[in-house]
Length: 353
Image (cartoon, rainbow, N blue to C red; front, side, top):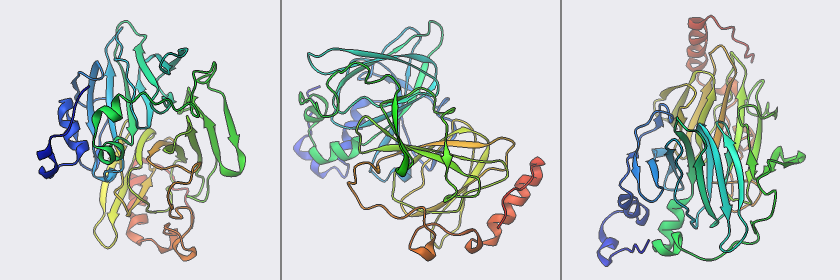
């Protein structure tokens, strides 16, 4: 790549990540949400050998970024490796990915719409579109901003020969889709999950009545994901946490409220393909007045397997020292709005408190 920061870049008022991003010459999407990641406009991305766009929403807070990549029919991305973690979710199409360490054996696995996987840190990888007539598209979360801002050397991040053999050595079956259920932590450990929309969830009533969910840990990452689902006519308790949780709607139609504490609420309507990222310490709450269960996948720049930072107690109510607002303590207008939204759709309100 042979890219470097000039001495004058230190006074440009831009982060090293932002300066690198400019060299990629693809669109940068900003704001509070993306209406539909399946339809956002993309441009040719030379480094990827495909089409792409960055997603730098306000809620990422420089802790992470996201991007959309589209591989043309019968096409493929360029081989690449990088010194940051990445979670990839396929939103359209089917294909295959090959992963390997320098000089080691190659492992290839097939994916489809709804698959989630993560190339191990700094491993070589290349994506292939298996379709002859349609493009394949995925959305990814990375912690590239942290790594690029910390080292400020693009060759070190993108052309580093170090092999993280404690994470991946090219072993057979690494991406088989098998996993381990960590029962006491409500976590599924795997390196490849073929079907996120159909993944079986567990009781998660600590978030709301009827809620189900699962934590996901892939490829020995420190970043993670989780799935949550809420029944028709319900909604979870409001809560807040740190920056960077990218909430991708998989099913259902509804809306979210997000607000900085003590300030007016912002409403965001969503549907499958919508992406919502609550800013740090903004209270947020998701509502399902629709006619089918609402399921989402949250891609996050933090995890629970390797404790690398102090995490707030998002599953405890405020009275118990947590960050959740109990139903009985929320602004009454929130529930009144939900009643009206359900009535518009002829949906029975099932939430009781």
